Image (cartoon, rainbow over all chains, first blue to last red):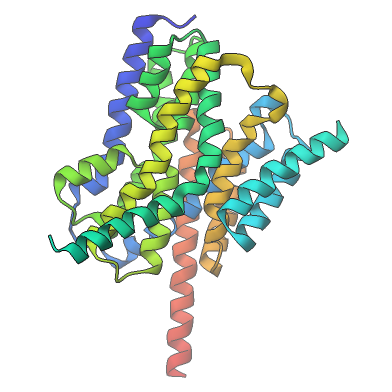
Length: 107
Length: 244
């Protein structure tokens, strides 16, 4: 059971902290022109963060008790290929569809 | 404001909304699962919904919740969850070239609704259409926000209300990585982007044992540097070929 006071303290502190992280550069730098080397790095933010976020979720999924699941791995590759070739909707459909199909066939 | 401008702003808003709408497929299971898990952990309806409204960051909310359940010290809960959200500082910086000239009040609002989906979709569009005027970019951004944040609040509430009605056989947990893959897969169009993604995955594995989710931040910084270096290398090569 989570203590009521602890919950509200964590939620509000997390809310404020997260807001400040989001506001940081956009809020304080504003319309200032950024140098070219920095802009070149920033172009790769999305594709630098998201794969690193996904990797542990695929390799060590919490729902499987943290152990590798070949079905999830296959579904992730299907989502990657479909997303690369056809775009967002297909990626999601291929990922979830592939996992459900494999689970239905193999379990 | 002229009628034509109002029309073009409305068009941009709807375009942002349309471009981000596929993610509804993901937001609904993701937020519903959060609602269910949070109720399971013993939170009441008001607490669950408040957390989603105050924080609006799914992965950080899951992190905080699981650590609170384990009885981790408050400062560990905060540091781990904020580390998950540190990536948004990079999003914030990456939006500066496109939205930095917006009025302060607007930027304050944009910061509150800055999430993975709205960031990725907006930047992809702004990057491919450098001529888009600032006001249209702002309208586009808020369009993309509408289909992510409103369902997020609503479905957390529904998940908390419905509780265990969602069968575990649907593997709703996989919606989270599937969503992130759908966000970056279409970006893998150029060599620097592919190098960045490769380094990101490799470094995430190498640094996975770092505490407080710091591995994510280290991997992201290394991958970003790798992407930029690849682009610099390509530019130098083109320059050399130009003079040869």
